Length: 365
Image (cartoon, rainbow, N blue to C red; front, side):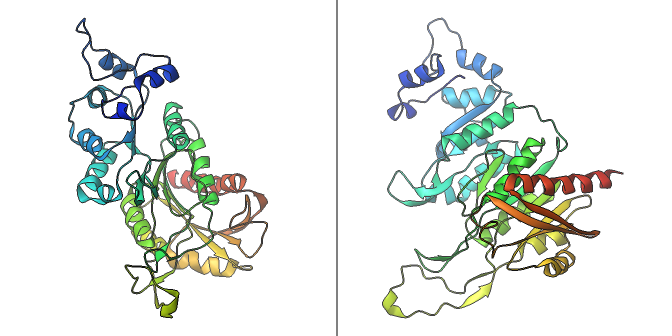
């Protein structure tokens, strides 16, 4: 491992600490006396090039090929896959210029990890907090492993967690989804060699493989899913999407003395929209959280929304489903229903992906 740092970064983490952790001299913004360029040699030999944290300024430089410090010079000269972990103020992250820079990097194949929602350096709260180091490291390690397995060369899009619809500045409509089923699907697909992107809403966990894109509301999920689904071989819609949202969310905080009545309206049907626009050969899987049997409802849902499979589970049980490490599902397909007995969510994910692989194989014939 080779560390490179800018002068600004060294105000927070000294190069001596990085040298001790990596057991190598740190590449810094200073010229060598012998006229050599060690950062270019290191960039040429890199297996993965990771920028973490990546500020809005560095993100813009990477997107537009600017090379005015040792980090951006190295990034511009390396053939290695690029991983960036953005960290910035929420308003900077939401600015159209930053969104355009992120989109440009993704088009070139960069893996963007995060950011997350949380407390920011300026004392504000919002999207812009750097992802946890362990999550970033997992993405780097996944890129360093050879892509082997039955899904090698395939692109898989997963939605996971719950969406939140704002009532006012501090309250929202949501659900109890932990995101564990979606994370298990993402990790299992990556283990089978797929390139995985997860659209992650409110969740207790995050996948330890692939790209993770944070979403908050159903509108966020709809935007990201519709943009990314056309390029995916497999779409696994495991997120617990809020079916309703307040008609008129309040900008400030409501007082309990106000006696407010909240009027709701339906949110977008993201699964149906993707089903209508699906391309030939694509495999689309929907999920249905039911209270009770729910198989007949799942059959109708599969036909109505134009998907290949609907995975249905009973969330009224305390030993499976929401907030549990286990699940028990029925996979509803056009040729019948497969029961997957209670097992860990990773094992259930494996059973679902077995069916997905069978569908992909059949469509190659």
